[in-house]
Length: 221
Image (cartoon, rainbow, N blue to C red; front, side):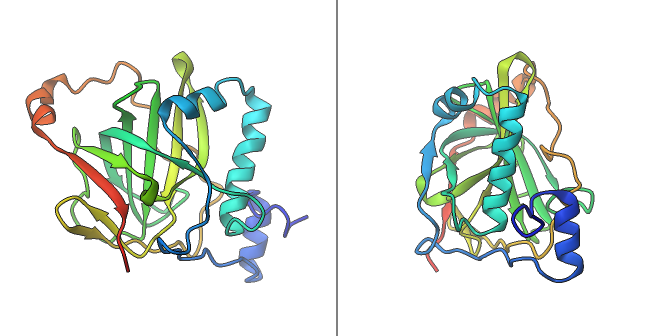
């Protein structure tokens, strides 16, 4: 039971204690697993009918598949253009304890937020700024780990790029990520708090309008 369900916090803690965790595989663009790809409208349509129990079961499956390196289930990849709401470093109290996390909102459908987890990123300055836009492509391999239903029929999707070695941004900047050695499975999901549907960047409108969209994709090794 413990080995079959490493996503359960107690099971994960026991596996970690006895050094029985399966190491998270550092995929590349050549080895990342095939999966289904959803844009914002498709992923909202997919999960909108789920009740609390169904969504809980599906979220457990997302985490279990990730921890087992997708041995039995394909990943669900998120695609689309997103505008950054906030950015912060990850902390020991988060599920992923080092790196950065970006909270952003779909430019196509404001009912869909994304949490882009960037584990192991040691960059001293934030990789994005509020108001930046980025584009998750098929080659981003942004795999879903959690879907959270929020107020007003909105959802937040937590994703992590599976091709860790290098994440390339437009402009030749390369962000080097590393798979986590250990997760804090007792931490809260989603990792960031909901800024609310009324969140507006009107104060930064001129900067937002001038900011180009950044493509985020796994770099070739």
